[in-house]
Amino acid sequence: MMKTNRSHHLPMIIAIGMALSIIIPLQALAQKKNPPLVFAHENQHLSLMQKAYYKERTLTAQPLLPNPFLMDNGKKEVKRYGQWAQRRAELLASIQKYEIGMKPAVSMDDIDARMNGDTLIVDVHVDGQTLTLSSVITYPKGGKAPYPLIIGASRNSIHAQLFTARNIALMTFRESQVNNYTQWGKHDRRGLYQFDRLYPSLTANGAYSEWAWGFSRLLDGLQKLGPEQTHIDMKHIGVTGCSYAGKMALFCGAMDERVALIIAQEPGGGGAASWRVSRTIGKVETLDRTDYNWFLESMKTTFAEERVDLLPHDHHELIALCCPRAVLLLGNPDYEWLADPSMYVSAEAAIKVWQRFGIADRIGYSIVPGHDHCQLPESQYPEVVAFIERFLLGKSDTPTTIRIAPADYQQKYDVKRWVNW
Image (tube, rainbow, N blue to C red; front, top):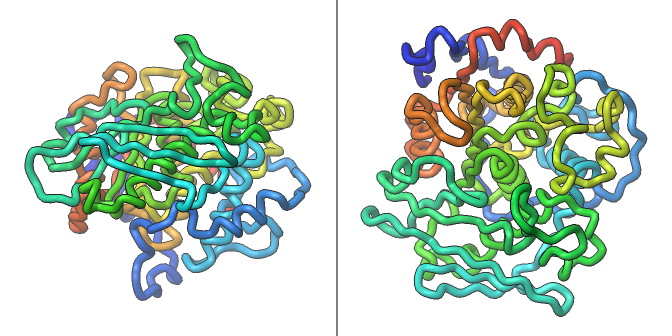
């Protein structure tokens, strides 16, 4: 286990050790082998997700965090990893149906990809329309192809040297090529984004659905060309982003099972933080106070204020969509708006999913003060490096049981208040 109680964090942090926080059910110990670290397809169980998406359901109030193991029928609960596919499909359907809109599937037959020097170019064809994505791949100076790859959602806010020094390639997902909404500059509006040309029936979608769709098309291009042309190892791809792009990285990684590692940096409300918890902790980004260019406008209509309890899921289950793959959540409690106490509760609840399958060292969080927004401090480098080395470089003996948060979080924001499962 990584030693997380480092002197330069005290007394501001708590470090929760293996004996206290990792309780592995007997059925997980009985498994012959651990679940895979990554998969070869965007969505292994697309048909299950689509079936759940179109199924009508009655919304009932759930003041506490919903049980991520309980199937939609309310009768069956996930006890072992082999049952997780069905439940993951239900959660994926719920998040699309009630929060961000449908992420449409695309056949590989509708993808054309090519390399122009070090630039990946992907053409996506849908009903006679074409959308083109491009991104430069920055290859390391050392190492040997095929290389692991980290993709920055909009950009990579983590010091590039943490990757390049380890011979990991870099790439940026330019989300404006799909949906150019921005909070600060000139942009189009719903119905006029590039995505909308291809899917005129999905103009109500939130940006996070459309961005996740575009991100997956980049991976389609890499996969279709293969390592012979791209020099990229499809089994070791990560995604990261900060702030609104931290949310983007989480949605993109959660919804594409080809991503081995998700690093969501300071994602705030609508990212790793729970909508239910955020509503109780002050001046933070809540479901009522987020940017609705990112989400379905119907989410606010249906689930605003106390009606948030009707939401069939919460964002501990968005995090859980990444399971059994690896997730690292990075926080900054100096910025109240980011709702890091809510992310802490959400992360602690999500960890229980990985715990049930005996792989709790594939998820971690580090919430550390004393730095500017989206400026990763050196004190958090060890956490990031540990996850990079284990899940992008395959160093399986690297300790990644990381639980770091301000010292008062465990008492003030006790996850047991929100979890009764």
